[in-house]
Image (cartoon, rainbow, N blue to C red):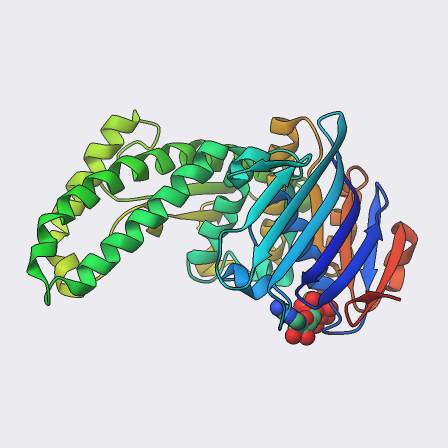
Length: 366
Ligand code: ATP
Ligand code: MG
């Protein structure tokens, strides 16, 4: 798939922008705080309805504006298509159109313009807490499986309601009567998430092992292990079995959840672990090993999407190439000979010869 043209109105620091892109590499250059990452964020959002950094939709609307408008013309699934989002600053429900027709959910545009983002923060993803790793998995899976996206949205909604009950039950003990209903629903939807994740992480791990082997000359054995709630004995088990196992775990933590006033157990705590020749990367990996493993994961994510959608998803490289040593840069550059790629950099350096250069200054093309 290719993004041919992007039109932004009041998105982040872009008041009005219309840009044509190359089918290959697009290099976006500019000094700090000019809007390079904002542009990648807009491209990612257009296809997924998700931002890789905003907490709330309103953050994407230009300061002082009521709404933001994103429009893109796309070549995808063998034809010309268009996507459009209108986002509101005041929290009103956002609007989505595909080819001029209104759509209700981002799931309805899955596969039209998927993208994989790679940024410097990702280089820490394998070292720190589990939240960014879950985010990586969720973003990738949501773009591949609209049903997963819907289940995740549902799970998050129930979890928020349950959190409120756990916070308020002391003042209002009657709330405890409805808690079991929430727990049951949480386990049902949670079981579905685990089922999807088990399959996704298995495939991701295998593909990443291939890249890691290629880069490290096969010296290390790369393994990715999906980690979920401890009562789950086999994440591939039927959803009904998983539901029961999640229930067991929740029941044994019933009192602890009430006491701590927070949702202690469930797939919202899921994680994955990477080991190199059986040694945990998180605990013992060197900086170089961690970087190579992260690059392998990102390339694997792109490969899974390509296989599944039979088209190359966009690759968004935000400032990441300049963070890598020449050997790793070349490894990434060798992998981006196909598909459409957007690269941001303060210093274009040796990247200018890769494709079209777009210079950004204060939310405008220079
Ligand atoms: P760097 O090289 O430092 O990464 P960048 O070019 O990637 O810089 P961006 O992250 O795209 O910079 O941000 C550019 C500017 O956009 C920031 O100065 C920020 O204050 C501004 N900005 C972010 N959100 C909004 C918004 N909603 N309205 C207006 N401006 C915004
Ligand atoms: Mg940036």
